[in-house]
Image 1 (cartoon, helix red, strand yellow):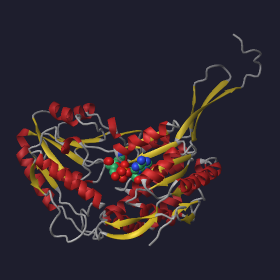
Image 2 (cartoon, helix red, strand yellow):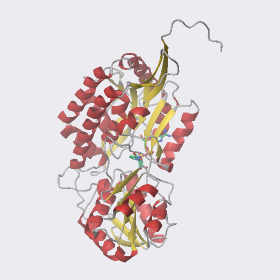
Image 3 (cartoon, rainbow, N blue to C red):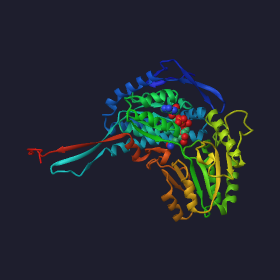
Image 4 (cartoon, rainbow, N blue to C red):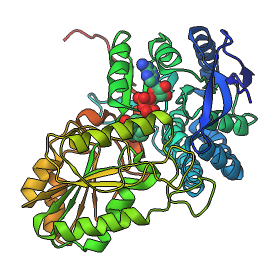
Length: 484
Ligand code: NAD
């Protein structure tokens, strides 16, 4: 099936007529073709988004609320079919794909209300009979660039606050998951005013860069790898655009000697293997106290073996195939390198034999790790957990802080002093105590160090999409002179 770009609520091919293929990672078959868009397609989308901004940006937040709430409801009404699209192009188990749609709906609801509340403030005046108003204004056209691992919920993280703040959007999905965003655009096309949301598919180096370079797109919000984030920041600097970057992670979990070993092993297994380890906050490093290391590692291996791999459309599947052949091959390369560098493979490390097709990779655990191995220094984005022993909390915290990343961290302990000491000293955007990968729509999410710039979720996300303006009002008409 041939899909088209969604520009001004109309469906169009790329001007060049070029397309690329979208695969189902479970069947390994091509399921669709989508436009390989270029400069002229991006130009068209930006132009209509600019026009739409005139009305959308000047509406009251209350008026926009009604639209956003309709979008939220419409998403839920079509949750089954949208979830199937995610599963078929990305390999995500259907139950997780359903959660994505619920999340998307919740973001739309949340920001529809928040934007009404948070419109500005009055600050202390500098003179009598004067007033200083601070008003938050939308930027205009927001360029949103989305990865493939949570195509619709990560779209919602950007779209909901950006629209609620009064911006219009040009959005480029990942090459791997273009269908999910186009499907959603179709589902909401009769609610969305023309030009407010425009979806342009294409390669990052072509359509993506054209969005980033476009002089009429004053702000770029990007989620993806550190490498691409740096490229985008460099390109955006030429026009001094605002950039918010949600990038990769190498999240550690610290298992203290007072933790419940079975609970910690279950948590680490889920945190490391859910979505085939293709989560920015996946557990990618374990630091476990020496005295419980053997018992914990044994329990983690048992948990890894219990993970039920299978058809993404089966409601009982825990983990589907990896999202693409590229992802699978990267994983195989990283696992082989870890073995060559001397890590000991305890379970997994291969494509499971029970599947004749599909880009599956078995949940994998290594020990005998040294801190210089790539498996602990670079994001793997794979279902691979390396386990290292530590002698103390300070050592664990130093090791947790030892990478260039700073997205999230988890600690398992029953000791509140240890837990909060870790929370104080860990350099990451989120610290979870006894429950990995936890997020809260009302609390900021983002990375420190090279894991990103800016925040999503909460009031912080709304701020990303608004500029503050100071309006000074003098109501003393008796003023005669401005000279001191
Ligand atoms: P990626 O960087 O390869 O691609 C992300 C998006 O950027 C895609 O739409 C791609 O087409 C586009 N792109 C690529 N090159 C571009 C360029 N030069 N200019 C403009 N756009 C370009 O990342 P991915 O493989 O899709 O996603 C996985 C990465 O995303 C992982 O590193 C993961 O940790 C990260 N991620 C981070 C978060 C977070 O919130 N911090 C969430 C999910 C994923």
